[in-house]
Amino acid sequence: MKKVIILGFFVLSILACNSKKETEISSEVQLPQRPNILWLVTEDMGAYIPPFGDLTVETPNLTRLANEGVIYPNLYSTSGVCAPSRAAIATGMYPSGFGANHMRVNSNTKQTGLKKYEAISPSEVKMISELLRENGYYCTNNYKEDYQFKAPVTAWNESSKYAHWRNKAEGQPFYAVFNFTETHESGLFEPYGFREVETRHYHEGDTSYVWKNNKLADAKNRMTEAETPVHLLKNTKFNIPPYLPDNAVVRNDMWKVYNNIAEMDKQVGAVLKQLEEDGLLENTIIFFYGDHGGPLPREKRLIYDSGLNTPMIIRFPKKVNSGQKDEQLISFVDFAPTLLSLIGVEPPKHLQGQAFLGAYKAKNKRNYIHGAADRFDEVTDVIRAVRDGQFKYLRNYRPEQGYYLPLGYRERIPTMQELLRLRDEGELNEIQMQWFRDHKPKEELFDCKADPFELNNIADDPAYADKLQELRAEMDRWLTEINDDPTLPEAQLIKNLWSGNDSQPVTALPEIAYANKKGTISCATEGASIGYKIKSKNGAFPKIWSIYKKPFELSKDAELLVKAHRIGFKSSEIIEVNISDLK
Image 1 (cartoon, one colour):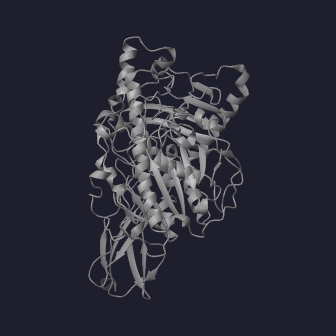
Image 2 (cartoon, helix red, strand yellow):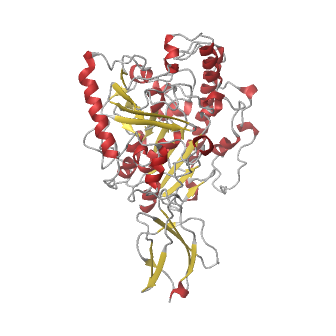
Image 3 (spheres, helix red, strand yellow):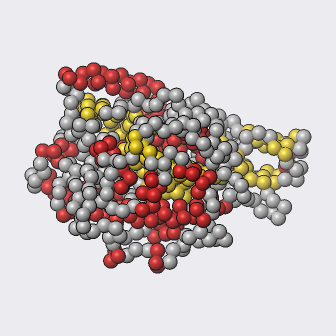
C-alpha cells in the first residue's frame, strides 16, 4: 500500500510539507458574542497527523476539523512534560516563575528527600476556568487536572470523568475541556489495548443520560488487540528520526504510537458528534492540541522542538478562515488571555501570555517562545530555552551533568530499553550517542530550519555570534521578568514559597456577615477564591460551588457552606453557617 510518509513527528514536516495556504488570519473573525469553547486535548503529541504532513495513519475526524478550520504549526509548550505545561495553560503564567516547573511537586519524595508542596502563584492569579465562570460560562473538565496545585472548588462547575456541557443551564455558554490519554507515553509499555477509562468518550449523545455511570461503551466500541491496527498496516515503513535506531523494536513502538492516534481520533469524533447532535457546532470555537511534544525517548521531557512543539487546530463557527495556516509563534501561556479575548473580556495585565485571537488580540505577534526543564520525577536537570522563528538557544545550568538521566518511568518504554542495550554494546552511531554524552556545553544554538532534529550545535560558530547574543539577551530579559532563578535548589524554592516556614500555608477561614438582607463573605488570605453553596428549600445543598464576588441577597433563615482557597495554599475547612445565628 502506497503511503506518503513525511519525516514524521517533527517540525520539518510542519514547515515544509503542509499544503494549506499560508496567510494572515484575520483578527476580525465574526464570532458569536458569547461563543461556546470546546477544548480537545491529547497527550504526548508531536505533528504526526495528516493535517501537519504525516500521512502514516488516517485521522478522519481531525482531518475534517483541519479542513474546516485553521492549523497552527508553531504552538509550543513551556515544558516537555504535562504537569508544568498544564500549570501554564491553567494560569497564563510561566511555570518556572511560580514554582510549578518541577514534575511533580508532590511526588517522588522518597527519591528526592523533598517535602510535598504545591506551586504558589501570585495572589492576583486565578485559574482561567474560574475567570470564565465569573463571566457566566459553564466550565467542565473531563477529567485530568494535574496543575502542580489543587484546583480551588471555584475552578470548575464539573471536573470528573463524565463532566459535560449537557449539564449547563439552557442558553448558557460553555467552556468544556475533554482530555484524551490514549496517546500517552505509557501506551508504549502498558499491556497493549485501549484503556477502559477512554470509553467515557463514546457515549452517543443520549441527552437524557445522567453523567454519573462509568460504563458508557458496549463491546462494539472497544477494540481488541486482534482488531488492531485500525488504519495502519503492521508492515508500514516508518521514517525513523536519526537519534533512534531503525530496528524492529523502535518500529513496533512507532506502530503503537500511530495506532493510539487512530483510537484517539475516534474518541475526538465521538465528542464532535455529540456537539453536532446538540445543535451547537456553529456556536462553538473548537481547539485541538497536545499537552507537549512526542512520547518517545529524546522527545518527551526534553526542550528540543520534539518535546515542546505540538500541533493545534482551531475550527471557528461556520468554518471561518477554513483551509488556512497561521505560522505565528504561540506559547501555552497565550491560551488564558486568548480565551478571555474571544469572549470579549480584556485579559488582566498580570498574565504573562498574549492573546492571539479575539477582541484583545495583541498588536504584535510573538518574536520568541520560552521553555524550561527542571526535575522530572526522580531526576533533575536545569535547562532554559528561547526560540525565535528559526533559531533555538539552550542554556545548560548543569553542564557537568550528562544529557540522558536514568528515569525509571521512561525506561519502561521498549525503545528506551533498546537504546540502553545498544549503547552498552557499542552499537549506536555518532548521532544516536549524542544523548548519552556525559557532559554538556554551557550554551547550545541550533538552526531549527536547517537542523530540525537539533543535532548540530552552532553556538561556537562566529557566523552566528549576533544571533547567539540576541537570544542570550532575550533569555536574560525573560528570566528577570518572570522572576526565575534556575540556580535555586528545589529545597530552597519550597522554603521561599512557604515564606521561610516549615509547612504549607493554609488559607484562612472565610468570614460571613449579614446586613440589609445581603450576605458578605471575606477571607484574610490575599487572593483567596471563595466558594459558597446555599441550602435549597428541600434541605439539600447544590453540587456546584458558586463563586463569591460581591454581596448577594440572602434570606434571614438561609444556611450556607463556605470554603476559601488560594492557589498553592491548603484550602480552608468548609464552614456551615446559619444566617439566623449571625444576628
